[in-house]
Structure formats: C-alpha cells, structure tokens
Amino acid sequence: LYLSIFIFLLSCDSEDVVQYFEYPDHNVLNIGSQLTDLIMTSDSNTLIAADKGNNRVLFIDVSTDNMSITKSVWVGSEPTSLDITSNGQYLLVGLQGASSISVVSMETMSLLGSINLDEDNVFDIEYVDSTNQLIVSYVSSNPAYNKTQIYKWVGEAWNVDYTVELESPYGYVNYAGPISISDDEQYIYVLDKYNGPPYRVYRYDITAEGLK
Image (tube, rainbow, N blue to C red; front, top):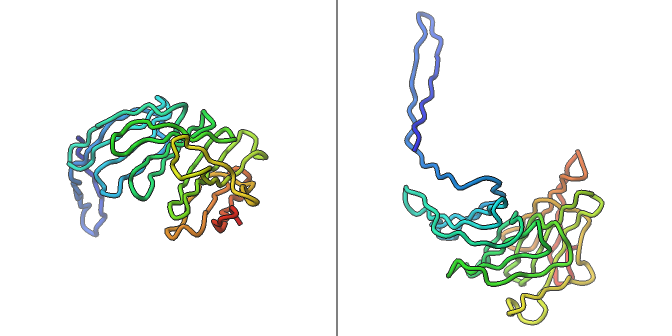
C-alpha cells in the first residue's frame, strides 16, 4: 500500500505558493516478472494474468480492496496471449513456446487440454464466438514468415480432441502482430508493426471462407 503526494509550484506576483495534492491510497500486488497479457472476467471480479516467465496463468481476485491470487495454473511453454469465450466457460492461452493454445476451465480454474496448431510462435489470439472460429497471429524472428490464420473446428465445436483446421480458401494473411475483433465480430484488425516503420493496421472481413 502506497501513498502518493504531488507538489505543485505556482508562481504569483508576490510570492511562490506551494500546493500539495494528496492522492488516495492504491493497492499494489506483486505477482512476478515477464507478464505478457491481462484479461478481466465479465463480472469484473477476477483478473487473469499470463505469466510467461513461469509458464502459468494467475487468477487474481479483485472484487475487494485487497487483491489476492486465488489460483495459479500451469499452461505450457511461454504463455503470451489470453481470451475468454463469451459464455465465460473457457480461457484460451496462446503459447509462444509451443505450437498450441491451452484451454482452461473458468469454472474449475484447471487445464482441460490444448488446441494443436500448424505454426510456431503464437503471438496473439481471438475467438469468434458467433461462428466458433479461432484467429491466431504468429510473429517470427523473420518477418517474412509472419502471418495471421483463421481456423474452424473439425467436427463439433469444443470437441474432446480440441481439433481445428484452417478455413478455406482464405485461411491466412501475410501480416501479424496484435489483433482485435470488432464487437459485432464482423472484422479483424491486425497491427503489422514488424514490417515498418511505417506501421500499418489491416482490416479483414471474418467469413466462413476465411479472412477477406
């Protein structure tokens, strides 16, 4: 718990006036190093952090003034990105050190399995709930190999094997970086900051045939 005080000097005609602006106490929770992403649950009671340095995600109770870690879940090599399905059932964890995405139960806060992918270096992920599609951005040490791909389920969505395959014929685009989907899940925005400067934002339609 820290108390911050700022001092403001105001110059007047006759004399200098010193004013003190006191800020209220704020809470600080030390949770480690190499944190790569944060996501909040829809009820705003739980904050989830990707702890890349320890290959885990942390569930943090923020419902009161006293923040606390409620659960630590091992998820695999170098977690870098997080997303939660709209029904609040699954937490998806992109693993930069593996060709996969870990699936964590939000109810039990436990690892359920993994979605195996066809590329390495997962950088960012987005799940399209309305169409049950998965979008993954891959960033390579060589920008020529950067890409963002869109997947569909093989068989039923969330099948026990967690098997996905590329949409066809527009399964990928040759840009990668932070990604974000629109609220209506019609568009995906890709910030390509590895082929610049200048950096560019690309917008693609999310369709049953892929990214257009």
